[in-house]
Length: 434
Ligand code: GUN
Ligand code: ZN
Image 1 (cartoon, rainbow, N blue to C red):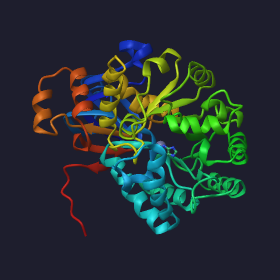
Image 2 (cartoon, protein in one colour):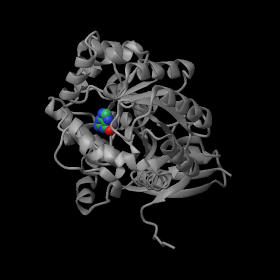
Image 3 (cartoon, helix red, strand yellow):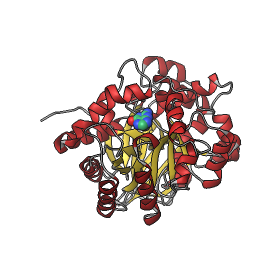
Image 4 (cartoon, rainbow, N blue to C red):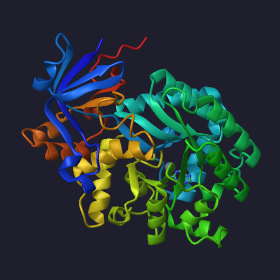
């Protein structure tokens, strides 16, 4: 039986930078019709309802329906280490993150954190994500099992790090065999995608980076997920280790890791050559503003990335990121852009956090736009979630309301989250714990 949802509906299927107002699809009084988890129809309520006599319609007026958020870079094993004081990237990894990741040798711990993590994503309105696990293959099993049980569209992979610290090292051989086994077990199952995941250039030997290239060549529909050009000390160490490489991206290129299914987190300190190469290869950058500010890594240069037409998405990068909320992430992206001298259009921010990110993850046909034929992952935003926001947003036109929610917003603004048309989080439901 189809199900209808009546609400103000907004999506930004195309990048407003190129498509202008055509990028935005808005139904002030809209109807979304969902059948078997798929968007069967969408449009103005009055015009569409006649096509569906007797349709069971849930009245969600007063809420803004948007596509589920797509977080293009996040670490689930770092969930419990968010907000760790005092250090920049390399020291922070040693002091706070590697000890936390060692605990994922215990599969019961991995299952517990996976379940909590995915529940938190839904509470924040994130329905799809590209997720770092740990070096332990079982950490990926735990996350994917939890994603299957929630029917979420998740991409992840075992971290390759044969030069990692004590207790978090694999080898080129085990990295290869465990990745092959995980791809066979999970890739393409339900809504899951496998991502070949070398942590970053510094934690893999040349031999293991070559293994990552082999794995990608053998499985060209998997993703490549890693970090690049985040912190100046990191970059100096990379260039010191690979003196023959022209820059950081070139290190990855030499091992066959740069292509249209590659996602590099951060990309703060890039040269023009790297931006050109990113564009030419079709690789994408996950912009992670809350992380970059928290670790003092720097300010990404959106105007420069745009000048080269680099594919982009938004990432929370929790645990270096300071919020799981993509609303908060959009707000911090706006501030980074302001520090660079230009504002970030709120519709563009929403595009990057939904359809743009989905396209970068190769999921653009399935999610991100709430278009007919897409999977019905969506949320209902409540601009009156706080007394201050209620006052600020009262009577505001859409663009200003959307912007206010990006600046003031967080999980409180997500009234409901739906996965494939099924209610997956209800902020206002009375919680009864057994
Ligand atoms: N570079 C290598 N590992 C990490 C990580 O876990 N977080 C961030 N932000 N950068 C990294
Ligand atoms: Zn990261």
